[in-house]
Image 1 (cartoon, one colour):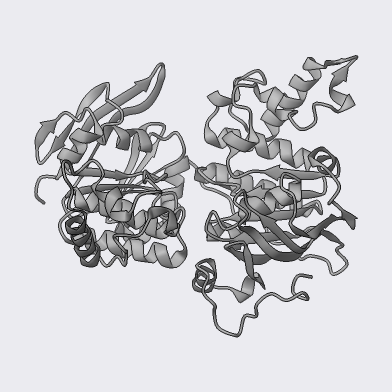
Image 2 (image 1 turned 30 degrees about the vertical axis):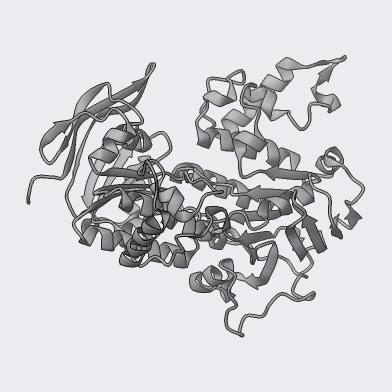
Length: 514
């Protein structure tokens, strides 16, 4: 084999006393797709940010075509042909596709028509159907990702780093992205593919590098490994299977009901339109869809954060219309929001303080007119133990915890609050395999206690693994409600993209909402 296109040798990076990367060494060949796997905190994002010039290594070296290179900034990386497409896009919504692509790469008097022609030719070469004159804000999220890719291709990238590239895509869009990755590699370029989806790794990677605790714990050819071995390397142990599904008794009572719920967004547009469904005791009702199609509005309507334009919501037969947020919490509604740091936690407060955010007014936490701090600390300690939260103690500041441990904290609090209904919006977003397994088992355990569960996720594997029934949400409209056995990945992907599917699966009716 020829000398590698890129090589990392003994790269070490420390943040204060925390070792993010320890003597990391691996290589990437021209024309190779390398998948980088690892739990949160494993060091995979840090090593890629070093390669892209966002971080600087404390020791070690980077070689390109056998020559040691210093990458002090993303500008240096781009000059060497290295481009990075991060999970959160860096596009300017008010600008056109072409303007975003040439931003920072053109100066002086700009011939926009000529650049539009270049962008159109580049898009055609790689099979992307994109209007160069379209405004980014008007594009679906899958097309916006293609714009990010075209930016890298316009800069003549020879190594493309892709961080969780399918997180916001439908299954069909993900398949097209995988085809692009293979085509890009076939042209002699290289790709580093950071993902936690093992099926995608096995579908597209030539080689797989597994990191744990800042070190490389595996460098394997795709053909010589399997998903079980990879998951064991990632977390250091085998994951036991999820508990078997429980049949919902025919006598199970209806718990939550939405009838014709519509919501207007801040601009007067439609956030939700005529949404109707019901959830029974001991049922997990899954909602699939690409982020931004009304999921957050739905959660906030049930919890009382948003007023209804029309329709009704009831819990255990009680109309929630006149009840505020605190009253709904008192009825037993727990809510795990999609953005734990923005909407689920106060990052500057301690773990114990966050545990009682929604119940601090309860008499049980008071001693005279003051908070009973020792009792609150004891309660928080019990949850640290029960949920295996890695924290020094109840006084630890939440911002110092890892994302997975922050999520466990929110889940622990909301499971206690949600004595009747639990709402999970993207319950495992950004989590590693071990934390995902833990959260899934916590959801199933609460279902077994007879609670109703609304589970919203963009991860189809999660929806299929947990749900009893599945609804698909597109632009605020329920596309249909189905039994799990009635759906395939292809059908649910079409529904997520707003397409009608074959007549054997009916659209939702008033009766199907029951």
